[in-house]
Length: 126
Image (cartoon, rainbow, N blue to C red; front, side):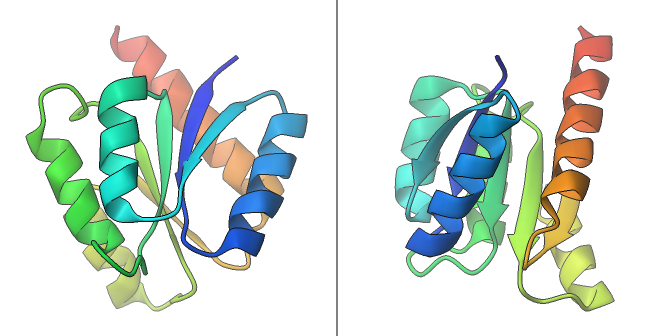
């Protein structure tokens, strides 16, 4: 069962995504802010991270940059989650080290496809 870390400050979004992903066979651990997300990523070593870009303490871009600088978490795939759907938002997320981008409200089926694609790509590298 792949382990997904969901870093999302909105409790409703966090709970809904956790339920959807759990039903689709993922183990979901969650954090409500960036600093907590970094600590969980380091300790739990998830297979993939879903990172909200609009976190209040340490935004998703900065948190992703820090993940990429840490040898223990640098290789974990990250999908950016954001309510901002402009091309510049996508470009900024990818420039910060995210592997993919998903807008809110989240299309769960599309998100699951992206998760599987990134997990498969990671498995092919090993």
